[in-house]
Image (tube, rainbow, N blue to C red; front, side, top):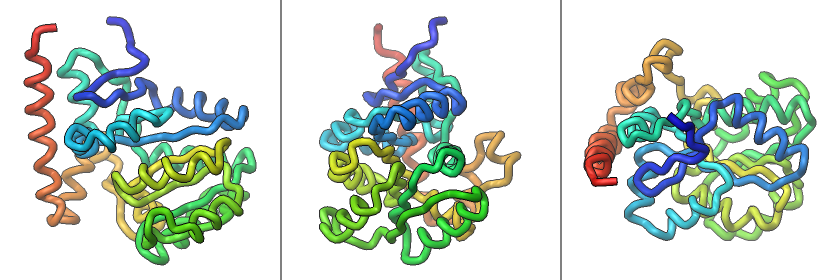
Length: 245
């Protein structure tokens, strides 16, 4: 079977690369000062985009969309267009922070509850000696707040990680990226909570078994309603797979 560069899952085009391949591509783009917008999408985001065309258009403008969720990988498999591997937003962010520390790239963290971005920055600096974090801000501001935008622009970051959840983080990035045309922007959802140690990630054996979602549900039972989107997503995927080609 031919390996496809991009795989369409219910209207969203995913870049079909391994983590190592993504890092090679992104490393090259950073060296060439080529602006980059990355969306990390799970089944919840795919289904939201189907119902909100304006959000789908934002995702379509991204340079890369990664399969952040085993449901997307399973969905692609059912549709007969396999994705090489799941590339989570958290793992990609950590790899990019390591790259930033190695190459001297400037990093800005924005999003999450007050204090979380600061704590995440502190942990990242400990983990990656030499990492330049040139600013942090929590996620409690109105989109289009000129003070927040100007503070980020003035810091001249090479990478901006926005932890605000969809669709807000992508809306924020879309509005700001033209002001920093050489920078890498990436929406990272709840990744600052994990990076800071505020929220514990699933044990490695559960990650490898693709049971992170179950671990998160055990830790946060209030997520149950959100989790119901996965069976709905798979049902729609199966319906799509049955359609004549």
